[in-house]
Every structure is written in C-alpha cells, then in structure tokens.
Image (cartoon, protein in one colour):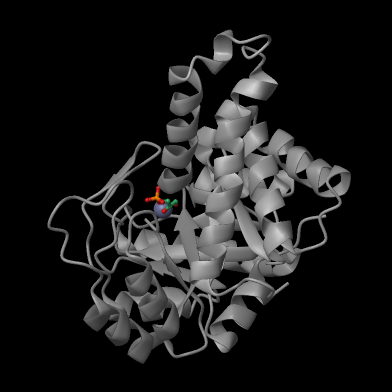
Length: 288
Ligand code: G3H
Ligand code: ZN
C-alpha cells in the first residue's frame, strides 16, 4: 500500500539527504521505478502529471496500478503516489481517487488565489493523512504542457505559503524543466538561502527539473535543504536511447524480437539503473 510522503521527506530534511520523485508514464515505467527503489532499499515518490495519468487511463487506475504492483512485486520500501503539477480540480480528484500525496501547482495563479487554495487543500489533506506540496515561482521550461519562465521565488511569498501547513514546498531557484540550455547559469543558491532564512530549516523543499543538473550541484542543494528531487526527462532519455539501440541493432527483426515485452525491456532496464543512480546521488540509498 502507498504511504503519505510526509514522514519520508521530513526524515530526509533532518538527515540531510533527498528523496527521489520519479514520474511514471506507463506500466513498464512503474515497474522500473519500483524495482529501482527496492534494489536501492530506498523510500521514493512515484508521481504522475495530469497528462500522464490521463494517458495511463485515469487517476483511479494509477492508484490501483501502483498498489497492485507493490503487492505483486513484493515491494517493502515506502512508496508514495503523488500528483505532480496538479491544478485545483486535479488535486481534489486525486484526493478522492486515493493518491497518498498531491502537489497543488498554483504558481501561475495570482498569489492570493494560490494562497487561498493552498490553505484549503492543506486542511483537507491534513484531515485525510495525505501529504501536500505547493509551489511558489513558476519553474522554467515545459512540463506536460505547463510552461514556466523560470522565476526565482519570493522568500516572503514562500513563507506565506509555508504557513498554510504544507508538507513540502517547491520554489523556483533558477531550475528548469527538461533539458538545460547551453550556458545555464546554475541554481541560485543565494535565493535558496534567502528562502530557508524565511521558512526555517525544518520544511522540506522540492527541486523540480532535476534532470540534467550536475550531480555536485544537486548534492549541494540537498545539503542546504532540498529534500525531494523530481526526475522525468532523464528517464525518458535513457529509455529512448536503449530502445533506439535495440532497433538500430535490428533486434526487432530477430525471432520474436518484435514482441513488446522484448522491445521495451532494454529501455525499462535503463530506467531501473537510472533510478538507482539518482537515488545514490540524492543520498537515500538504504534509507528505507
Ligand atoms: O515535475 C516534474 C519534474 O520537475 C521533472 O523535471 O523532466 O526536468 O526531470 P525534469
Ligand atoms: Zn516539475
């Protein structure tokens, strides 16, 4: 059964390590992410964007898929099922569907509306034992149709949202969704320090756009107070590269190499390796 992300990110914040949050897109992705976490003996967050959940067949199916795989794969490490970049309606729908954690992304809304809706959802989530992530300062790049310009969050606004009683706070610190452009100046640790000075040293902070940030920079961010790191693109790139290799080697033409269980296997295995690699960079190997 999935669990709230609250305890795992609080333990990460106290312990100075980070929890991997991996986006899933289909059955194979879900199996790969769970297998990687179990082999690394690490707690993780499995997350769906609104678009990925729709693609997979809806929020209820995602809940059943993850919980049934936890059983059938004999997963024993803590797993949270999280809505990624949810709007207000999706947040409510996932609470009803049985997600154990949700993100309400109100960063594109007028701040007062973001505050009001975050406050309301925080009360509901507390009642239901579900963890809540909120966001201040839109993350750059494009995530499943959500486009942001990469604002740096305002520490005062972060404090106001934190005081709503959220369990995790995503804040723009120069991070970008997707592949980082040439010449990207790096994360704004000065902004991260200013945010922590306002929200305190106990609130777990979230780093979006985790793909493509140099490992040393991620470790520095985790050391400062980032407790959840989102990764999607780098798994997609690893999967695509291995699948291309398989096809270019003509493996799909050998015997029953066209069988999807064979064709998707190299990419899926690459996802398992990437999950374990990232968990190690974040410092949560053997933290289950
Ligand atoms: O919310 C999802 C993430 O922020 C993923 O970002 O695709 O750059 O790893 P990424
Ligand atoms: Zn994101």
